[in-house]
Structure formats: structure tokens, C-alpha cells
Amino acid sequence: MNAFSRRGACPALSAPMQTGDGLLVRLNPVAGGPSSGGLSPKLLIGIAESALRHGNGIMEVTARGSLQIRGLTPQSAPLLATEVDALDIAVRTGVPVETGPLAGIDPQEIADPRPLAEQIRAALEEAGLVQRLGPKVSIVVDGGGQLGLDAVTADVRLAATHTDAGIRWWVSVAGDGQNARPLVTAGDDAARDIAVAVLRMVAEKGREAHARDLSERQLASLASWHSVAPPSGRTEGGAVEHSRRPIGVFNVRHAIALGIALPYGSMPADKIIALAQSALTHGTSEIRLAPGRAFLFLGQPAAANSSLQRTAATLGFVTSPADPRTRIAACPGTPACASGRIATRDIAETIAAENADILDFTLHVSGCAKGCAHPGPAALTIVGGENGAGLVVNATAKALPAGYRPGYDAARGIGRVAAMIRSTRYQGETAAACLTRLGPAGIAEAYRQE
Image 1 (cartoon, one colour):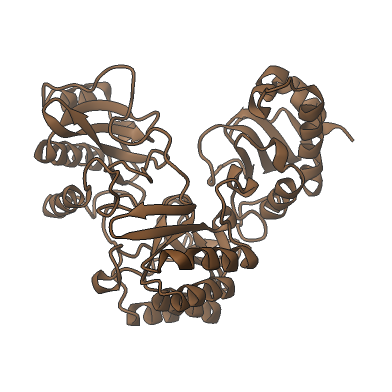
Image 2 (cartoon, one colour):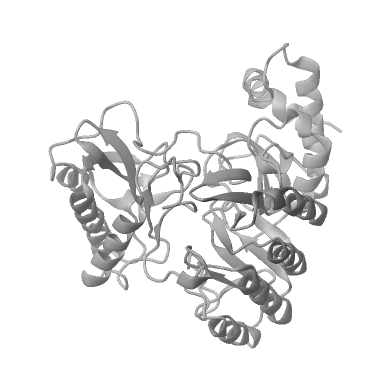
């Protein structure tokens, strides 16, 4: 294996990763406006122009809010890195310590998570853990608010919560906002120390380890550091339980933020350039990347948002949280990914266009059984394999499919399932509830139907 082919790595500018359509690089600009290294429209245009020159012109925003550039070669990747470096964009390095895209400017957040995040970054550096941890080890510091991080998985989660003693951080490990293992509720300093202790234990197990690999004894020792245990019955304390999608208008301090998403997280660079040029014309001063595969536009007058949304919609971006494409998770698939067995994006587009009326559940279209776009269970998952496009019901892409049909015909199979939902669901019943009532066998039979 060469330096460009190691799977499981985070493909930073200095270490691109091999995919089905060439090399992939990823960068995480620091939020906070151009003066602090954040992305201005001009800087995003500069990155996209480099992507056109040196890659295949496809750019992505990931589920965690990172920017990716696809289709590079061993010769062009260093050229792109040089050009991006010349733009002087401040990017996050080291162990990812993630905060929400509206951190510090959201009037609804319980606490500004940025100071604690900075303390944790400094403590990890001082402890010498940065080089000892694997590339996918991460920490989330969630202040709550309109765009919380419940959907983002992490090795350590710190979520702001109100207590009788004031604002504290609910510390949990190995999961997202719903399934992470709760440890303790602690103040800033203690929460920082526990987070560092968790990653110290992880580092001792090797670079392939994660917090999920810690023993019960280790977790118990972490929880016993402080006497305040998290209340029973919930796994995540301060974050909003049902955070909004990062699409639409958000009231922030002294401004309005406009969220516009990339369909399935991917868009041609020339369309990103066109949108950024429109934002520049309308007075946007900063563009932030948001978990959930979106851009957040800040600084433009509120009156400009409607025009910016219309431009985005014309270009094919997602401008409404009700867009059926927001209910579908789809990885790049073939030909973009070497592991993909089906054309996931084409399948997803057809399903969204033909079955928007029944998409009140999550549909996952996965090129292979790894399930990168949606690691958790989904109501329905189409997964590419040796036998074509399998259908998995209420499980992850790794589960055994209940039925198959040819990959090119997968969207028609979902159309058969949609037709069954329309003909059998009760008045007022959701499609998701109807699927549960029909059960895997009935759903698979409809999917296989010619």
C-alpha cells in the first residue's frame, strides 16, 4: 500500500486518499470570518477553481462538515495543496475537537463551546496524544442551540446542560447524541480532564483504537472521578434533542444565517463557484461548513436571502428542509468509489423525484456494505453487492438483505414499495409506521416484484 491508498484515514491536503475516481483531499476551515481564517466567498471560489484545475471538478461537504475535493492525481494533488496554502486559509489540524457551525453566535445555545474546545486541543497537544491517536478519533463539544451536534458520532461528547449548580457539561463516550455511553456531569476543567483521560486510554490501545474499545472497568474509573453522575433515562444532556437541519434561515447574534445544502453532500465545483459569486454580490462576508452537508451564509442583508435561495435552487442545491433529498443518504457509489457496486446518486435522484410523497423516513443508498453515508440503521437501505442491489429493512448496510434486484433497476424496486405504502396505509398513518406494520417479508416481496 502506498501513502495514497490507506483506507480509514482522514484525507487531509498533505495525505490524500485513493478512491474510485482518483485521490481525495479534505480540509476543515476554521469558522469565524475571513479575519480569523474563516471562508469568505472569494476564498471558496479560489478553492473551487483549484478543484476544477486539478481534480475532476466534484466537491463535497461531509456529514461532519468537512470540505472534500475529488478526482486528483499524484501529480495534481501537490499543486492543489500549494494553491490552497497560498489562499492562507486557517484549517483545523490535530485531533478533531468539533463545535457547532453557529457556535458563539447562536442566542439559543446553552453555552459557547469554543473556549472549552480550545482548552481540550491545547491539553491534547501538551499530553503528546495527537500523534498517538488514529485519524478518525474525535471529540464533540456541543453548546446546544439551533444546530446542535446530536447526529455527529464521536469518541468523547461534551454537551452543555442546565443544572441546579449552573451550566455543566454532560460527558459521554462512543456514539452520537442518542446512543453515547454517559459518564458524568462536570464543570469546564473536570470535563476537559476527563476528555483527555479518555483519549489517553484510547491511545494506550494503539492507533486503531476508539473509545468503544475501552473496558467496563476503565469506563467506571472515568465515571468515578466526580460524584455527579448524569441523570438516568437519557444519554445526552444539553443538546437540543431534535436539532434543525442546517437549511433555511437562522437568527444569530446581530445577523441572519442562511443554510443551503448540497444534494447528498456533493456538487460540481462550477456550481459552487456560481453560488459563491452570487453570495459575494449579495454582501455575504463568511461561508461556514455545517454538519449535515451544507453551507451557512452570513453577513448578507436579510432582504438578500430570498434571491440567494432562488439562485441556489436554480443551480440544483437544496434550499428547503422539506426537500425529499434530505431524507436520502447516498454515498458517491460508482464510479467515484472503488468499493461501490451501484450508481447510488442516480438511484437516489430517481427515488426522490418519483416518491417524495412517502419519504417521511430515512432511506439509505449505499454502494457497498460499509455504509459510509449512514453508518446507523435506516428504515430502508439499498446496498450494492455481488448479487445486485439488496434491500435491507430497519438495519444497517452491513445486514443481510431481505431481497435483491439488478442495480440499474433499484429505484423501480423502491417504487414498488412506495406503491404498496400508498395502497395499504391507514388514514393518518405515516409511511414509516406503515413499513413497520408491513414487515421485512412484505416489503422485500414488493421490492422484488417485476
